[in-house]
Image 1 (tube, each protein chain N blue to C red):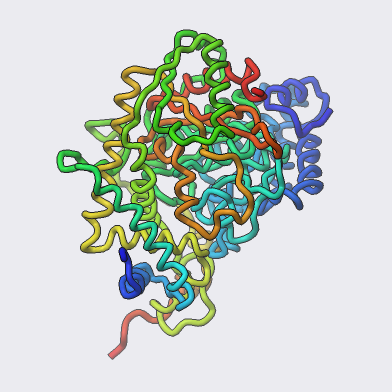
Image 2: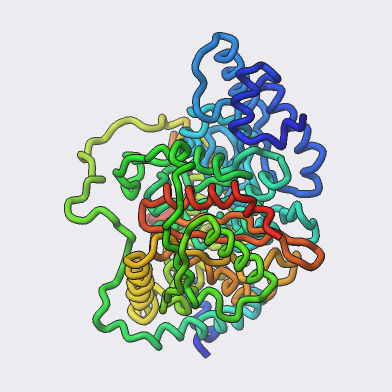
Length: 483
Length: 100
C-alpha cells in the first residue's frame, strides 16, 4: 500500500484499524520527499520534528481509544506566506530568509488542532506575487506532470506537493488565482472560499481586500474537510465573516439535479481547443448528471486584469512598506543613514517582480494619480462585482476554464510581465467580486505532453456547499479523468 | 509614454526603493506597457458608480469591532527575537533626530 497516495478518509480508517501508525505515515511522506523533492522542489523548509510530535500525539489518542479529530494524522504542507510558529517562514523572499514567526496563523492553528501533521513550508512566488512560482527568491518548483514546466503560482509548491504525493493536503493563498491556477496546472483540487470565509490572521499580507487562504487536495472530500476545519469567524481578523461554517463534508452527497449552471461567454471567446475541448466534455458530464446550462454574460470581464493590477499593487505597496530592516528580516549591512538603510535593505531583499508591483502600486496611489488609477479601479471593481450578483439571480453556479492554457514551460513568460498577468484572466474576477471558487481536474490535453486541464466553478457568496457538491458529483462520475 | 525615467525615480523614492540604473532601464518599458494596458479602464463610464473598497458582506453595524482594551501579547524577548539589531530592549536603528 502506498501510504503517500491515500486520502484523509482512508487515513482515518486505516489508523483506527491500526494498519499503520501516524508516525509511520509521516515518515513515509518524509521519505517520499527525500526521494522526489530534489526534482520537484516543492518544499522550502521541512518541519519533521513538528510533524512527528503531532503524529505521536495522535498515536497516543489511538492507543487510548479516544475519538480522533477531523484530520487526525493527515500529512499537510503549508505555503510559506502562512505563519508557522517557530518554523522559518520566508514568503519566498530573501528579505525574510531567517524569519522565525512568534505565532501561528489561525489557519495553521486550526489545521493542527484538527490533527494535521505539518511536514513543512512550500515554495511560492515572492510574497505571493506571480503565476508560476518562478518569482520565488530561492528556486523554481517544477510541475510533477512535466518537470520542464511550471506548477503555476503563486502557490506552486503546495499544488506540486499534493500532486506528487509529498503531502495529502496543503494550504495555499489566493489573491488573483494563486490557489485555483496551480491546482489546474498540477491536476489537483484547489479551493478559495468567499472573502472572509477563512481568517487571514497570520497570512502575510499582499493585498488585504483580495487575499484568501484555502486548501489543496487530491479529492473534493479532502478539500471540503480542510475548508471546514480552517473556516469560521476569528476575532483576530476583523474581515472574517461572522457566518456559521456548515458541515461541508457531510453535505457533499446532496443531489445536484436541477442546478442551473451559467456559462459566461466572455470566458470562452478565443479559448484554445486544447483547454476548451476538455471543458466542453466537463459541461456535458454535468448535464448528464442532471444540471442545466445556460449562456450568460459577465460584461466587465475584459477590464478585470487592469482593475486587479491597480488594486492589488496599490495594496501591496502599502503592505510591503513594513519590510524596512528595522524589526525583522534582512537589513543591508552598509548604509549611511536611516533612509539609506530602508532603500538598500529593500533593494537588496526584494526581487524584480515585487519591486515592479510596489512601483506600480505606489504610482497608482501617488498624489495626482490616485483618482485616475486607484479610485477608478475601485469603481470598476464595483461593476465587476455587480456582474456576478446579477448573474446569480438567474443561475446557481458559474462554470469556466480555470486558465486559458495548461502549464507553460519554465522561462516562457518571465521576460514579459504583462503576458504573465493576462494569463490570470479567468481567476482574478472572483477575487475582485469576493465570490468563492474551486478548480477541479478535468482530464488532460489530447496531445503530448498530456497536461492537466482545470475546470473552475464559481459560486454565490457563502455558497461553498453548492460548489463542493457539484465538484464532488463531478469527481464521482469520473470527471477528473475525462477523456 | 505613461511613465518616464524622472517619474520612475520619483516613485522609487516614495517607495524607499533604491533602483540601480540597470533596474530603471529594465523596469521602465515593462511598467510603461502595463500602465498603457491599464488605460483601458477609461473606456468605462463610472460617473454614477460608487467605489468598492472592500467586499464587506455584512452591512449596517460592524459586528467585527471589539472593545479597545489592551492585553498582553508578546513579551519583549519574543518581540525582539527577529531584530537585525537590538539594544537595551529596543530595536536599534541609525540616529533619526539631529542633535544641536
